[in-house]
Image (cartoon, rainbow, N blue to C red; front, side, top):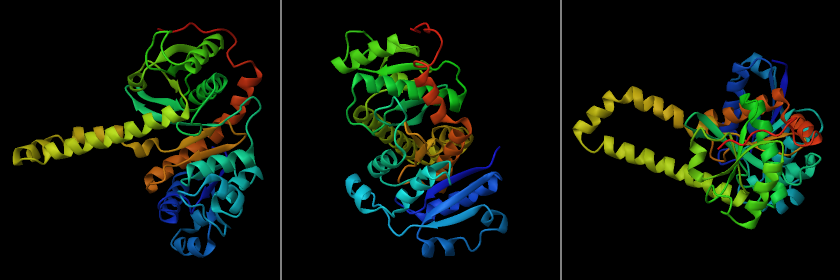
Length: 345
């Protein structure tokens, strides 16, 4: 792997440096080619690195930032009033070429607004979108937009499909990813005007568009990329997270209800361990702000060190695969593939 430099917003998120610093040190130990810039209050960060080994410190630097964007701070206020925030400085490092990507667990709205203002969007992209992997039967499904755009026009949904297809190819190696448009039914007459018009645009594109898909299809092997607006996508994401927690609580409750249930749980530990690992949302942490000229990764605000480390890994992978550059090429070549792909039913 070629040397990669990643800027981390060390002060962002619910836990700030207590999560970001351990995650950074862990990733430096695992990846010798990685260089990390911790952005935040030097007085806070420096003491936390006293026990870091010489090898790690050689590939780790601190960039001081005097301000922090609060989790519920309005995006406009963060953009105009906190130009020396750890979030803004980290994004500036990417613009200046000192880092190849930025990772932040901070305020989503502020991160999107700041990244869009500083880095700009790719030619042909009107709005960036948030995309992440969702666990599915055959691995995972990429879904976008997950909250960046509460509303979207048909052309925006087409752009989301293009960006999602590129990312699925770059990250997962899928040569011709299947793209579906989230709707309330698979029939062509279903959905509102925006969705139906977007479906026509996607169908006329050179993407491997398979048509409308429903919410349950996200978890199957039917589709690789699911496109929707940020309002619907964010509700779907939060519903998934809530249902996963509910199922986990039900399983725990049932296994601890009686002595024989606890005995069965003991026998089931290997299976439960594998199930927990497959469904662990921490391994899917790291949502991409696709459509920008550079790479910005949004970590969950409540991420722990393991989860934040995965977001750093996503950033490294997108740098290695040159995701923004590939999206640009796809747009310049008239939406990608050289010929119209057959629609899969």
